[in-house]
Length: 336
Ligand code: NAI
Image (cartoon, rainbow, N blue to C red):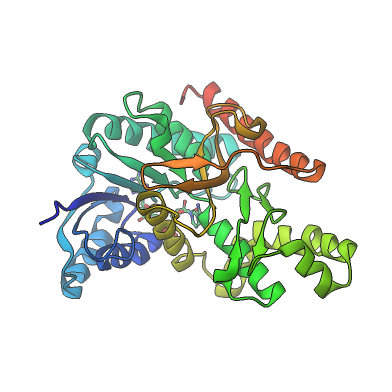
């Protein structure tokens, strides 16, 4: 029998946690032949909600689920973790400045990084969902000196999936036919959703858009004025329409991120994930920035050698500048 994979989910009593747990336990993330043990790590105020979710997990009778533990002790929470999904974070409150937000999250992700360093399994892989996700991942990574840096990632798969959804609708193609879209930079409004290498059923998306919209200029205009802002601001649109933030789609993207990382991207082209930069595409080394990535199951590889036009370079630089200023701010706070 396969040894169960131990998965720690922080903020498991929250909304995304609730949407995530059942899909993990069903086998959607690691496969329907991989048993799992779940560690739900919460703060004291969130414990009852996590305990309630644990009762429901029992009631769902998932054959792959080999145990659920609820705790507010960080060391216990990460003990032996093979995967750590860091969902719990401090949201921006009214009147909170960016510095306050980064400091509050530093107080969460610093200790969690240290606990991962000291207690997790040797093969631990980490994905940060809680915002500001990229810089929270940077903080956790900086506090885990014994864990290879490339094991720390942040989620931009939701942005990637949103871009796929918008393109599929625009070119009237099944979403599974769209390949090689990229989210670059920060999981924030400065992100750059890039379709310059994307194809729909094998045809360059730019050509398909031009044919549908009446020319290359019209296609460019749609990308700059509609597509990019819509993807970047989709979170706000969901809040406005649904009356609550993105939850199920965020959980689904987290499942996709981990599944592709662990099981590989295969023949489906690349995806997007925020990973520790090795200096590729001019992104300063060490920043946790979104790139086009593939995985053979052993780890993310940044897709090398893509050509970027001036527009793309400019957009990537703007988002990376934001990441640099976030890094500067957490350095000044002594968090990294
Ligand atoms: P939520 O407020 O429903 O749940 C957050 C949970 O985290 C709460 O139960 C809270 O008690 C817990 N928590 C807070 N601090 C903690 C700590 N130090 N240790 C363990 N647990 C802790 O929020 P929701 O909707 O589940 O969202 C979670 C995070 O995900 C937010 O930061 C949100 O901004 C972010 N998010 C990120 C997305 C992305 O694409 N990267 C997409 C959507 C949301």
